[in-house]
Image 1 (cartoon, rainbow, N blue to C red):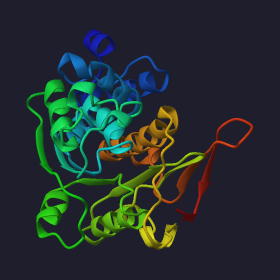
Image 2: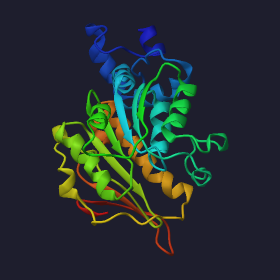
Image 3: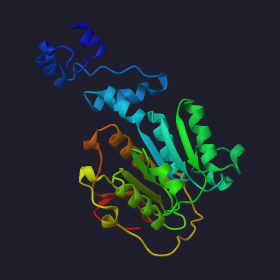
Image 4: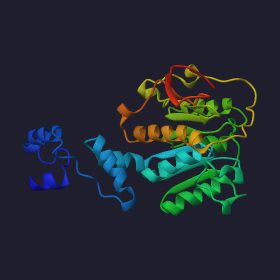
Length: 282
């Protein structure tokens, strides 16, 4: 009993103490025992420990997941930061761009020394500097719906797909969601604009999500280049997306939105407003 109170409990460790454990847990007197992890993840484990009776399972699900990120620019690079920090250990990356000086106000995994390098290579360096044991596969190319090589990278053996591209159009980003849906892989999409940012729900057929095309509407034609950028406007949808991805991977589905999109709007005068919608025009 002294160990249970001091270190936390392990589910079903001692059936005879289970009724007492339940009473103590309801009063906040005991917590589930934290699994042993490297020092960088101790605070992350404490977070899972606050949400679930089995934090070890949450840690294992996150660390064992293979996550594909299509686009490691303004949205994808920030999502990547949070997934690496939370302990994801397998990544598949796709991006055709190189690091540019204009990226540095919002894409924080890159540095001035990496200007001119392919983003997927610079992103790999960032990941491996944080944890050399992480597995990273990457292709430096634009999204191509007809590419067998890309389908193998982004869909084969993947547990989650993040669509974070806006070139040549947002239709391409929705195509990524279509491909994930067809293969029954959970997915999410996020975009940032000047006055409006958007995060889709997690699209997962097993959780009763709508098809991406039932929720998202896109205009035909290529997207116009947006020359203005503001780091917080860019980071907000990326952070919200990363939060949803991690809770889904951890198996904490009550903390995940599977049905509606989240839209952040910055009016010309007034504070930020967050709203949920069952259908969105991109």
